[in-house]
Image (cartoon, rainbow, N blue to C red; front, side, top):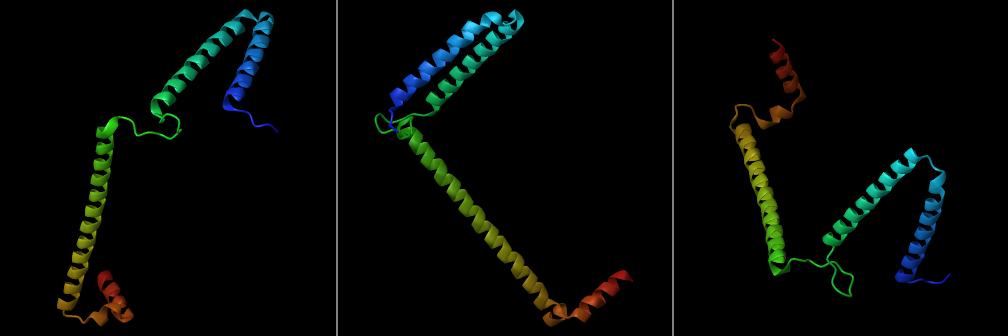
Length: 140
């Protein structure tokens, strides 16, 4: 199978589309006028949507000439703003992580302090009989 270029494929697609359009235009005479009007409106809406999609896609992609790679677009100010916002995001995530770790450490230290300062020895809390005693005490 031959490898065709993009331009050749585009020409073939355009030719095929024109042939289909010609056959549809030829057979429109046998369609009821009400249906023909609805088809005309649908065709206009489809073409309008296609134009919008094409405009959006060309506005969204800035390609560097000849390379086909996406460009940052907007110049050095846009790049600097993007890098600074990325650094701020990473800094915020690291700060949240550190504060969370510090808070958990304080909570565990408070629990350890309560266990050691209590009248009961720490071994009592893991004793199944003591847990049963606390459950019975709560019911009464």
